[in-house]
Image (cartoon, rainbow, N blue to C red; front, side, top):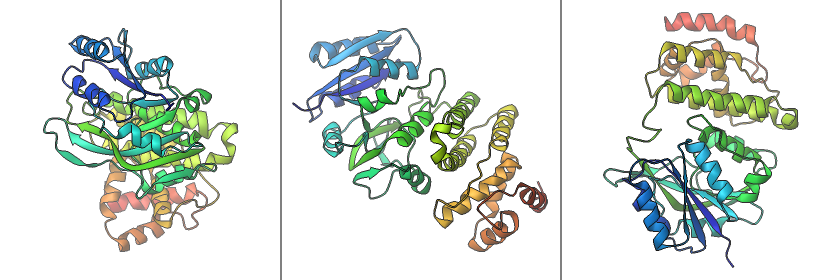
Length: 367
């Protein structure tokens, strides 16, 4: 018998999109699934929509709870799941009919999870907007015994999401993985933990998820100061639980590189919204406090250069850093500023030298 896949759908007031989402589950070519819909205290017609699907097909299961947030809803869904595999689906997204079948066929017997390609779609116009950022030309499996995939994420980038992955439930349970309660953007922490702890990951080069944009009710489209504060909490957890943990001492420098990469993700989030000065100061102090020296290069020359540029975040304001990237708009300027303001020997941080050249750097920018 084929392996049972538990599709977990957290839902809060999703009446506008939920029926289409559950219909896309119902239409899966792969038939051995259950769908656990965690109704997080919805006050609209979501309950009626769910109940109608439960009556139509006994593979749908309705779990109703008082409002506890997305993280708790997902955690409860995992606990209720009976399948060998876990798949997370947001209540306003859709699955192509081939989704679960292609992911099941892609996952290797030794892989902890499999990843498909996500297509973005405008929820209002149904127009397809292109694929989210993922590894290029990747099919099959990648081993992660020395955390090679973490370095690949930093080199190539990968969309930070929970969805469009089929996880072995034993992988989640054996590593005591849970979504952090009480924070927004919990995907950042889950993403790092799953990709860091996995011993092997499979990749499917077919579209297996439709991610909807322009939903005015989604967290992504309602960015506020609290969003940035909660992302910083994920940063702190990775820093304390992994970087400062002796258990992972052999990978300490790789974790440090990822945390520097995480800073760039935070900076991108900061640049998408208007946040108050206190939050901006919090970001700056966090960057300044946490530095990650290392003994050797791990990445390509281009990515190494970007990594060392971000050492400047220790001493500059966010405004200055943004201005810095505006200036570095040509290879000649890039090399000149790199030689003048970044380390001459790029293996270790020389904080005195950085501070010395940083004064000249800020004067040059005239900020």
